[in-house]
Image (tube, rainbow, N blue to C red; front, side):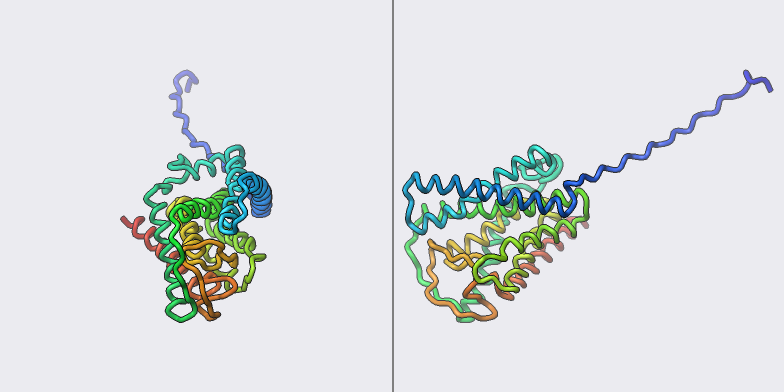
Length: 302
């Protein structure tokens, strides 16, 4: 047959194989941990210098206000983490915002308010159990609304810094390279390690702090809401330290609504570390994790 009479055959289109996303070295576990520690140390140094200078300029000497300034000093960690993620981890930075295009779809005021309620109820259950067991005796102090409101803001700065570093930056960076469980476990272990030097620390208290990190990592994965995590953490610390006047991870409150008059060591209360060193805290954290998982499953089925 003549070449001119041949019918041209259609060329079969082959879909190109999409290139796999490049896994960056800075998302490896050791790199994320080192970067997190570096940001924490730099932020804490910056925060301490700024807050101490402010306290000195205002001639603040009373223990209750200086106690709030200790919480406020965590502003430096906020600044360092936000600057780093803005410059080097833009998708993670967007996940901190109200409705970032690459995350943060659960960052709503509704979930923030729910987180405040959840954190307060969880802590109140633990304290009520110890009180009914006869381990705690309280007296009511003077109601100082301006101090209580200022304390809420300062505690939110401290709790928000830890969440921004662990459930925000670390969780987000590790998920770029690993699965959600690796991201959750690694950031929670570092979160627990950061409390090893706290006064009165025990094995159970460290286990509970790691579980706290895991519970909030589950919430971060299922609700996609850093704001919820910040709110739970804030309400937990605020309620036990500023409202009930109990030790917060071993650090004794210098200003609170209720005053602790007497306390007894038991399975439901640790005089050295507070309710965070008890089995009650273990149980409420497990309940929180299961509740978030079940809620996510029901939402997915709908």
